[in-house]
Image: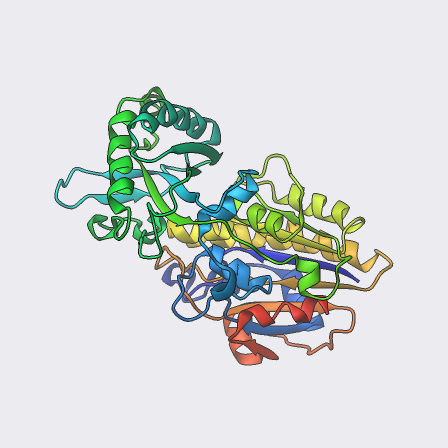
Length: 411
């Protein structure tokens, strides 16, 4: 059986006024996805357990069949695995965003951009180098900063088991887009360390050459770092063993370290695709092409697309519609055509991990629509297309324990 899993991150949404009351999924022209719904089944899943934050870290674990309450230890340690950063039991990994804070209202600073205007990876790497040379000596605990993709970076704290704890509370910056940040400062054990590092970064970045050039080019500067998503070394069982298929070969195609890290930790191969950005301008066609090549070697290939989530965070329905249509035309369509001619039995599953409604600009914890088509999948003939309302109306399966859903694809 050849299986392909396609994850349009944060694709699910709510009705949008500018789209005539449609969701981006129902507004977009997606003939291949609509056809697959007719040829297969549509359903709904909740990948985020009650009481847990609806981040892509938690949701993707649930989507891939891992109960988040059992296995989740934090976002940053997963991303550390993507960079082959080894963690010992006494280490902590901390996500480090470059952000833009509007301090014109001194008593009420605003999160102007959780991504520092989607700063480039090269610019971020230069800023990380400065942080290592100027902040690390000031830190009360041993730390080191590691550059990642664009605004997504890491801070690793070594041999400091008790510096933080489960009571340490941090907040994702994308939850505060265009909102005041006073209530989003770290609390609990070690909050003074995190706050100090964030405050010191403002001094270092204020007149950094990278920011000077960005301002000259009418781009947002990275005004400080934002530390969040901390956690300790995770331990996940191998995916194939989890589903009683120890010989199963699986591969991940993604632009972001979070998905690469999960893939690494569950025994998958990461396939690196040039020119993919984790944004709306990514090379959709290349993702489809590399996936088709991977199908020849692997039993399960996962293609993750971050663009839909980023559009949701920006509050841009137009960008989200564009990304959905690109996914349909340049990823789903060629992959489906390749599967039909591969000579093996096959299945294709398309599912978001969580909604990222453009009117909210952040993740929500709700059931998302998915479709499953291929060999031994009974055709239901749904004609309402692939979208949220169609799933509500026509769902053949509803998984409120979303981590149980993966059985439909691989068993």
